[in-house]
Length: 265
Image 1 (tube, helix red, strand yellow):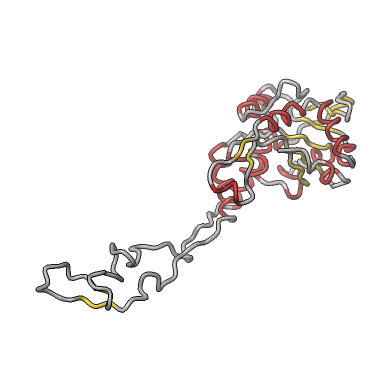
Image 2 (image 1 turned 45 degrees about the horizontal axis):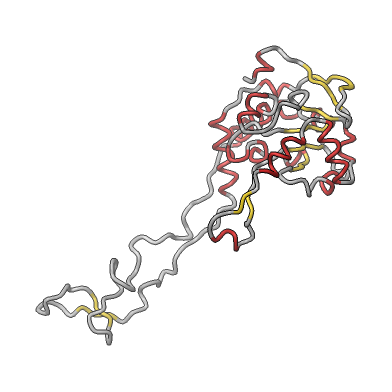
């Protein structure tokens, strides 16, 4: 259970785009769920497994050879030899040009499955982790300037149309230092990934959860490291990137109110 629940916290402040508290809202029961890192990790890995690409070998790989063993009496191993190529062996395992012993097959089950109840528990647990300042800070997020956890903002944030407006709001809410951390973390990827559309890599920034898209998704898409998602599309991987719970999350008031559906209260 996160520290706010242990302390008996029952409400959190609501902030406007100027970063000023204008009221309070009661915490949904989902924030009382224990933070289960093990369950969250299983759920995130299961979601990631759906993106794995099956791979396998051609059933005839290494077998397209006309081979025949010379038999005994030649002073050499009695492995099949490729006809017309002298002593060169083929077809069998362990020879140059031969077949692989146990090649990967496309029939292999690579999708990991998690029970529905466990997946729901993981989602609730990941939501609860966003209210724990210590858990959020342990992921590397800058939390010194964030006024409250969980951070709830009026529905005006859903209606922002420009990136400059998003930046101004995040600065007032104390979230922009975390965006700056993401910008400073950019590095050139090592290896051939540079040639495959993944030249740069960077840390993960804050997550904004909204009830409706009033223009915020387009306005915030140029903010490096930041994701905007509708509550209906919220999943464990967005809340716990890399299987680590506690992503710095900003909730719009309408989305926060609908969190009560997560626990049925």
